[in-house]
Amino acid sequence: MLVSHVTGLSRVQLITQDTRALDAAARQQISELAARRLAGEPMAYLVGEREFFGRTFQVTPAVLIPRPDTELLVEQALDRMEAFDAPTVLDLGTGSGIIAITIALARRDARVWATDASAEALAVATGNAQALGATQLHTALGDWYGALAKTDAPRTFELIVSNPPYIAAADDHLGQGDLRFEPAGALTDHSDGLQHLRAIITGAPAHLASGGWLLLEHGYDQGDAVRVLLLDAGFAQVFTTQDLAGQDRCSGGQWRDQNAAGRSSLK
Ligand code: GLN
Image: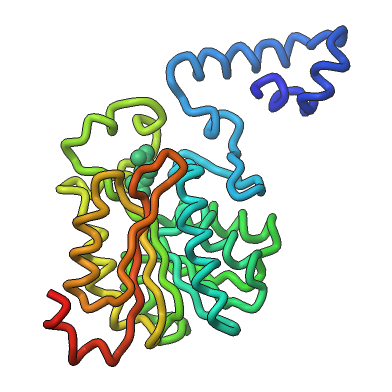
Protein backbone atom coordinates (compact mmCIF):
# COMPACT_ATOMS: atom_id res chain seq x y z
CA MET A 1 0.00 0.00 0.00
CA LEU A 2 2.78 2.45 0.81
CA VAL A 3 4.70 1.66 -2.39
CA SER A 4 1.47 2.07 -4.38
CA HIS A 5 0.76 5.35 -2.65
CA VAL A 6 4.23 6.80 -3.37
CA THR A 7 4.65 5.52 -6.93
CA GLY A 8 1.04 5.82 -8.07
CA LEU A 9 1.26 2.24 -9.36
CA SER A 10 -1.68 -0.09 -8.75
CA ARG A 11 -1.26 -3.44 -7.01
CA VAL A 12 -1.41 -5.19 -10.38
CA GLN A 13 1.25 -2.88 -11.79
CA LEU A 14 3.49 -3.57 -8.79
CA ILE A 15 3.34 -7.27 -9.63
CA THR A 16 3.58 -7.02 -13.42
CA GLN A 17 6.31 -4.33 -13.41
CA ASP A 18 8.46 -5.84 -10.69
CA THR A 19 11.76 -5.19 -12.50
CA ARG A 20 11.11 -1.46 -12.49
CA ALA A 21 13.54 0.39 -10.21
CA LEU A 22 12.49 2.98 -7.66
CA ASP A 23 14.27 6.31 -7.77
CA ALA A 24 16.04 7.62 -4.68
CA ALA A 25 13.29 10.08 -3.78
CA ALA A 26 10.61 7.38 -3.87
CA ARG A 27 12.78 5.03 -1.80
CA GLN A 28 13.29 7.77 0.77
CA GLN A 29 9.56 8.54 0.95
CA ILE A 30 8.65 4.86 1.28
CA SER A 31 11.12 4.29 4.11
CA GLU A 32 9.88 7.38 5.95
CA LEU A 33 6.26 6.19 5.68
CA ALA A 34 7.24 2.66 6.71
CA ALA A 35 8.98 4.04 9.81
CA ARG A 36 5.84 5.99 10.74
CA ARG A 37 3.72 2.87 10.20
CA LEU A 38 6.11 0.86 12.39
CA ALA A 39 5.63 3.51 15.09
CA GLY A 40 1.89 2.77 14.92
CA GLU A 41 0.48 5.53 12.69
CA PRO A 42 -2.67 4.24 10.99
CA MET A 43 -2.35 3.30 7.33
CA ALA A 44 -5.41 5.43 6.49
CA TYR A 45 -3.64 8.58 7.71
CA LEU A 46 -0.40 7.70 5.93
CA VAL A 47 -2.07 7.18 2.56
CA GLY A 48 -4.83 9.74 3.25
CA GLU A 49 -7.76 7.54 2.31
CA ARG A 50 -9.96 4.62 3.33
CA GLU A 51 -12.64 2.70 1.51
CA PHE A 52 -16.20 2.68 2.83
CA PHE A 53 -19.23 1.11 1.16
CA GLY A 54 -17.23 0.58 -2.05
CA ARG A 55 -16.04 4.19 -2.37
CA THR A 56 -12.76 5.88 -1.49
CA PHE A 57 -12.98 8.65 1.11
CA GLN A 58 -10.20 11.09 1.94
CA VAL A 59 -9.27 11.07 5.61
CA THR A 60 -7.00 13.25 7.73
CA PRO A 61 -6.06 13.02 11.42
CA ALA A 62 -8.95 15.48 12.04
CA VAL A 63 -11.49 12.67 11.49
CA LEU A 64 -12.22 9.17 12.74
CA ILE A 65 -11.01 6.50 10.31
CA PRO A 66 -14.03 4.85 8.61
CA ARG A 67 -14.82 1.39 10.04
CA PRO A 68 -16.59 -1.41 8.16
CA ASP A 69 -18.93 -1.76 11.19
CA THR A 70 -20.48 1.57 10.26
CA GLU A 71 -21.73 0.10 6.97
CA LEU A 72 -24.34 -1.65 9.14
CA LEU A 73 -25.76 1.72 10.22
CA VAL A 74 -25.92 2.86 6.60
CA GLU A 75 -27.69 -0.35 5.52
CA GLN A 76 -30.24 0.05 8.31
CA ALA A 77 -30.79 3.68 7.30
CA LEU A 78 -31.28 2.86 3.61
CA ASP A 79 -33.76 0.10 4.51
CA ARG A 80 -35.87 2.43 6.64
CA MET A 81 -35.70 5.21 4.03
CA GLU A 82 -37.51 3.05 1.49
CA ALA A 83 -40.77 4.09 3.15
CA PHE A 84 -40.19 7.77 2.29
CA ASP A 85 -40.15 9.85 -0.89
CA ALA A 86 -37.61 12.67 -0.95
CA PRO A 87 -36.67 12.12 2.72
CA THR A 88 -34.85 14.65 4.84
CA VAL A 89 -31.86 13.15 6.62
CA LEU A 90 -29.62 14.44 9.42
CA ASP A 91 -26.18 12.95 10.19
CA LEU A 92 -24.89 14.22 13.54
CA GLY A 93 -21.09 14.29 13.95
CA THR A 94 -20.36 13.38 10.34
CA GLY A 95 -16.53 13.34 10.53
CA SER A 96 -15.26 12.40 7.06
CA GLY A 97 -18.88 12.35 5.89
CA ILE A 98 -19.07 8.62 5.11
CA ILE A 99 -22.63 8.09 6.42
CA ALA A 100 -24.20 11.25 5.01
CA ILE A 101 -22.45 10.96 1.64
CA THR A 102 -23.19 7.25 1.17
CA ILE A 103 -26.87 7.92 1.92
CA ALA A 104 -26.94 10.96 -0.39
CA LEU A 105 -25.42 8.92 -3.24
CA ALA A 106 -27.78 5.97 -2.70
CA ARG A 107 -30.82 8.25 -2.49
CA ARG A 108 -30.55 11.12 -4.94
CA ASP A 109 -33.98 12.32 -3.86
CA ALA A 110 -32.88 12.77 -0.23
CA ARG A 111 -31.91 16.13 1.25
CA VAL A 112 -29.06 15.41 3.64
CA TRP A 113 -27.67 17.57 6.42
CA ALA A 114 -24.33 16.73 8.03
CA THR A 115 -23.09 18.41 11.19
CA ASP A 116 -19.82 18.37 13.09
CA ALA A 117 -18.36 20.32 16.01
CA SER A 118 -15.00 20.39 14.19
CA ALA A 119 -14.52 22.81 11.29
CA GLU A 120 -11.58 20.71 10.11
CA ALA A 121 -13.77 17.61 9.98
CA LEU A 122 -16.50 19.47 8.07
CA ALA A 123 -13.88 20.54 5.52
CA VAL A 124 -12.94 16.87 5.00
CA ALA A 125 -16.63 15.94 4.62
CA THR A 126 -17.22 18.77 2.15
CA GLY A 127 -14.20 17.70 0.09
CA ASN A 128 -15.46 14.11 0.02
CA ALA A 129 -18.97 15.22 -0.96
CA GLN A 130 -17.55 17.23 -3.87
CA ALA A 131 -15.16 14.49 -5.01
CA LEU A 132 -17.90 11.84 -4.91
CA GLY A 133 -20.66 14.01 -6.35
CA ALA A 134 -22.98 14.16 -3.34
CA THR A 135 -24.43 17.45 -4.50
CA GLN A 136 -27.44 17.50 -2.16
CA LEU A 137 -25.35 17.52 1.03
CA HIS A 138 -25.53 20.53 3.36
CA THR A 139 -23.09 20.96 6.25
CA ALA A 140 -23.48 22.79 9.56
CA LEU A 141 -20.87 23.50 12.24
CA GLY A 142 -21.71 22.94 15.90
CA ASP A 143 -22.73 20.58 18.67
CA TRP A 144 -25.41 18.01 17.82
CA TYR A 145 -28.77 19.70 17.12
CA GLY A 146 -27.32 23.09 18.07
CA ALA A 147 -25.48 23.07 14.75
CA LEU A 148 -28.80 23.52 12.95
CA ALA A 149 -29.65 26.85 14.59
CA LYS A 150 -29.27 29.73 12.13
CA THR A 151 -29.35 27.40 9.12
CA ASP A 152 -32.22 26.83 6.71
CA ALA A 153 -32.38 23.13 7.67
CA PRO A 154 -35.88 21.66 7.88
CA ARG A 155 -37.54 21.69 11.31
CA THR A 156 -37.97 17.91 11.31
CA PHE A 157 -36.27 14.98 9.57
CA GLU A 158 -37.46 11.57 8.45
CA LEU A 159 -34.16 10.04 9.50
CA ILE A 160 -31.53 11.00 12.06
CA VAL A 161 -28.32 8.96 12.10
CA SER A 162 -25.18 9.25 14.17
CA ASN A 163 -21.96 7.48 15.00
CA PRO A 164 -21.04 9.63 18.00
CA PRO A 165 -18.00 9.30 20.31
CA TYR A 166 -19.12 6.43 22.54
CA ILE A 167 -15.99 4.94 24.12
CA ALA A 168 -15.92 5.38 27.90
CA ALA A 169 -13.02 7.42 29.29
CA ALA A 170 -11.81 4.43 31.32
CA ASP A 171 -11.77 2.03 28.32
CA ASP A 172 -8.25 0.64 27.69
CA HIS A 173 -8.88 0.54 23.93
CA LEU A 174 -8.27 4.31 23.79
CA GLY A 175 -4.58 3.64 24.40
CA GLN A 176 -4.30 0.94 21.74
CA GLY A 177 -3.79 0.65 17.98
CA ASP A 178 -5.18 3.25 15.59
CA LEU A 179 -7.21 4.89 18.38
CA ARG A 180 -4.02 6.44 19.82
CA PHE A 181 -3.77 8.58 16.66
CA GLU A 182 -7.43 9.45 16.11
CA PRO A 183 -9.03 12.65 17.49
CA ALA A 184 -10.10 11.96 21.10
CA GLY A 185 -13.20 14.07 20.49
CA ALA A 186 -14.36 11.59 17.84
CA LEU A 187 -13.88 8.56 20.10
CA THR A 188 -14.80 9.32 23.69
CA ASP A 189 -17.20 11.47 25.70
CA HIS A 190 -14.54 11.58 28.48
CA SER A 191 -17.22 10.03 30.72
CA ASP A 192 -19.26 6.78 30.81
CA GLY A 193 -19.48 6.51 27.00
CA LEU A 194 -23.22 7.24 26.93
CA GLN A 195 -23.26 11.04 27.32
CA HIS A 196 -23.47 11.88 23.61
CA LEU A 197 -25.79 8.97 22.81
CA ARG A 198 -28.07 10.25 25.60
CA ALA A 199 -27.99 13.85 24.31
CA ILE A 200 -28.79 12.74 20.77
CA ILE A 201 -31.65 10.47 21.89
CA THR A 202 -33.28 12.97 24.23
CA GLY A 203 -33.00 15.74 21.63
CA ALA A 204 -34.32 13.64 18.73
CA PRO A 205 -38.12 13.87 19.26
CA ALA A 206 -38.02 17.64 18.68
CA HIS A 207 -36.31 17.05 15.32
CA LEU A 208 -38.08 13.96 13.97
CA ALA A 209 -41.13 13.83 11.76
CA SER A 210 -43.87 11.49 12.92
CA GLY A 211 -42.88 8.04 11.64
CA GLY A 212 -39.24 9.10 11.35
CA TRP A 213 -36.34 6.98 12.59
CA LEU A 214 -33.36 7.57 14.85
CA LEU A 215 -30.48 5.13 14.19
CA LEU A 216 -27.29 5.06 16.24
CA GLU A 217 -23.97 3.26 16.21
CA HIS A 218 -22.71 2.34 19.69
CA GLY A 219 -20.21 0.18 21.55
CA TYR A 220 -20.45 -3.63 21.66
CA ASP A 221 -21.66 -3.49 25.27
CA GLN A 222 -24.06 -0.53 24.99
CA GLY A 223 -27.04 -2.12 23.21
CA ASP A 224 -29.10 -2.66 26.38
CA ALA A 225 -28.45 0.86 27.69
CA VAL A 226 -29.23 2.50 24.34
CA ARG A 227 -32.53 0.60 23.98
CA VAL A 228 -33.54 1.73 27.48
CA LEU A 229 -32.72 5.35 26.56
CA LEU A 230 -34.79 5.03 23.36
CA LEU A 231 -37.77 3.53 25.20
CA ASP A 232 -37.57 6.15 27.95
CA ALA A 233 -37.61 8.89 25.29
CA GLY A 234 -40.83 7.41 23.86
CA PHE A 235 -39.54 5.61 20.77
CA ALA A 236 -41.39 2.64 19.27
CA GLN A 237 -40.06 -0.33 17.23
CA VAL A 238 -36.87 -0.17 19.30
CA PHE A 239 -34.26 -2.63 18.05
CA THR A 240 -30.56 -3.53 18.10
CA THR A 241 -28.62 -5.22 15.27
CA GLN A 242 -25.24 -6.91 15.24
CA ASP A 243 -22.14 -6.13 13.19
CA LEU A 244 -20.15 -8.64 11.12
CA ALA A 245 -18.38 -9.79 14.28
CA GLY A 246 -21.75 -10.57 15.89
CA GLN A 247 -21.51 -7.67 18.36
CA ASP A 248 -24.39 -5.32 19.17
CA ARG A 249 -23.48 -2.25 17.11
CA CYS A 250 -26.54 -0.36 15.92
CA SER A 251 -29.79 0.50 17.72
CA GLY A 252 -32.72 2.62 16.75
CA GLY A 253 -36.35 3.41 17.09
CA GLN A 254 -39.25 5.08 15.35
CA TRP A 255 -40.82 8.31 16.50
CA ARG A 256 -44.61 8.46 16.41
CA ASP A 257 -46.33 11.50 17.88
CA GLN A 258 -49.31 9.33 18.84
CA ASN A 259 -46.94 7.46 21.17
CA ALA A 260 -46.97 10.41 23.49
CA ALA A 261 -50.17 9.27 25.24
CA GLY A 262 -49.05 5.67 25.65
CA ARG A 263 -45.49 6.49 26.62
CA SER A 264 -45.81 5.56 30.29
CA SER A 265 -47.11 2.09 29.38
CA LEU A 266 -43.81 1.34 27.61
CA LYS A 267 -41.88 1.53 30.86
N1 GLN B 1 -15.96 1.93 16.65
C1 GLN B 1 -14.87 2.73 17.07
C2 GLN B 1 -13.89 1.90 17.86
O1 GLN B 1 -14.29 1.17 18.74
C3 GLN B 1 -15.32 3.92 17.89
C4 GLN B 1 -16.09 4.86 17.09
C5 GLN B 1 -16.84 5.86 17.92
O2 GLN B 1 -16.52 6.17 19.08
N2 GLN B 1 -17.86 6.36 17.35
O3 GLN B 1 -12.72 1.94 17.59
